Image (cartoon, rainbow, N blue to C red; front, side, top):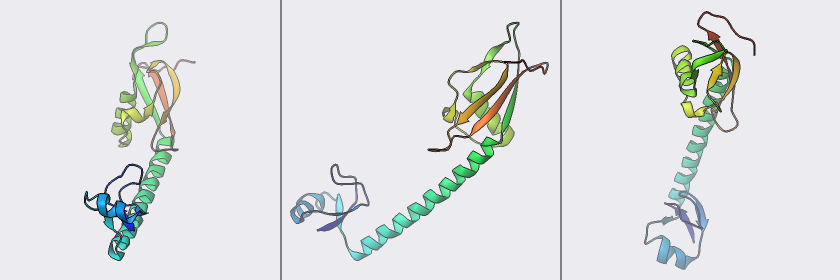
Length: 155
């Protein structure tokens, strides 16, 4: 018997999947518990339409991610910070600081957890920081840290 799953069923499939199962399994287990519905032509057409809609939505989202990645790849952020005698900052530049700067300067909203900064930046110089936009899209932004007086130290 052909059925369309209404909910995820362990060992069988996910909601929306079209499956061929034994008649007894469908009649005695899946249908009474409303885990599945018989695969009528109307339900199959509805499923096909939902799949096409989902694919269009994913394609549009992928294009948006690609555009955002291209835009992020061109960005250079500059932070001014107080510096001690050893060239170390009083404080540090964190992923939250970078996310805030992106939001304020470029109007790009990125969650701080998507900015891949292993350790906070604690010295003067130029750094390359990855931003995870989506799977496979990790543009790199340039972060310049300068002294409040405007002097850039050599690394």
